[in-house]
Structure formats: structure tokens, C-alpha cells
Length: 175
Image (cartoon, rainbow, N blue to C red; front, side, top):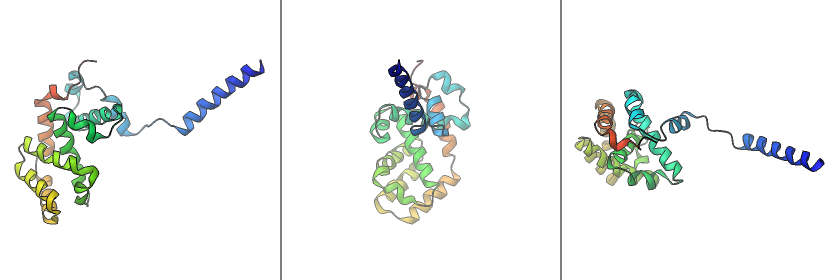
């Protein structure tokens, strides 16, 4: 009987330690990945425009997490549309910071090159050319030019329109 009580107490302690040592991730990113882990057409269509790009990105990051791989190993293997949206979104977010050199760092460089391809796909050829040139030269004038272009361009709206126009490419099915 004592062994049974010790066994139950050990299970209780291990459950308590698991909750303390490995708390559930309640961040906004985790919530979005959970919500958009499986992107159905219905879910995509019901997502408001102001949340659409974040929803697609969360879906893609959930795929990388599920594959237990890094995003660069998983996302480029998906559709061209998904890769373009993620890469351009990442480029836009990196350009919001004060250090454009992050675009040339080893963990980011591949996505920066893919962002140039995505920008061309979206019709932003001049911005894509500036990005490619920046990746080769690290010219701060190009970084400033890209930042100015992003501030005055409708790239956010273009991404939303692109996702809506190519909705099937962003859906996982009706699982």
C-alpha cells in the first residue's frame, strides 16, 4: 500500500515539475500558429485582411515547427506562392529595424535572395533589383533606398491581394 501512495505522489510531483519547468507557450506567435496550423479555404476566406499575412506566416512557421526543421529547410520546399509571401514578409520586417546588414547574415541570406524573387513575382522589380544589389555590395545607400521604397509602396496590400488571388496555394485542405 505504501508503494502505491509513493507511486501516486511521484506521478503528481513529475506532473507539477513538468508544468513548472516546461510552461505552455502563451505568446501571440504560439496562439497564431495554433489557430492557423492547418489553413483551410474556409479559414483563409474568413481571416480579415489586416490579419491575413500574419495568418499565412503563422501557418508556415507551424509547418517548420511540425517538421522539427528550420524555416529555411521547410518553407522553400512548399509552393512558390507560400515561399514568396514568407520571404517578402521577413524582408519587410527586417527592413523595419535600423540594421539592414541582417539581410546579409548567414541565417537570413537565403531568405533575402528568395525575397528578391518574391518581390519580382509581386511586380516590385526595382525593389528586387535593389535587394539583390544590396546583398552583393552592402551599400548603405541601397538600404536607405529600399527602406524609403517600402515606406511609400503598397506592398502590404499587394501581399493581401496576392494571397486572396492565389488562395488555393495557401490552403492545406479541409482537415
